[in-house]
Image (cartoon, rainbow, N blue to C red; front, side):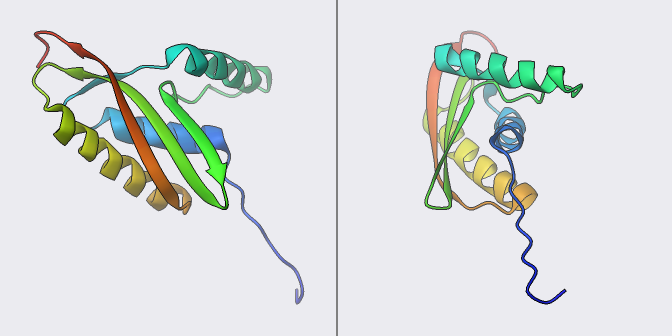
Length: 123
């Protein structure tokens, strides 16, 4: 087995799914929002997964970009009214960075969080 190189590539859909799950678990996050570009990507990804008989991974509201071996993640979400925007945003950044690194071994360069809405009256 000398001279054999093995490379593991974790797909963007897997990274997005891990990031979405981590972000959704943060207190103060009501839900992730896919936005227009996210909806198009989600439909394409879900269609491919259904075509090959896989259950589509939940990844709405997360976009993955790769550059130089590092990941840039964009998380779009809605907060509950009880959440402090800055605190929840930072908690999402930490949770996503930690979960992606732990689950996939991928190095996250940045996690950008966009708060698109706040649900009034929802704790």
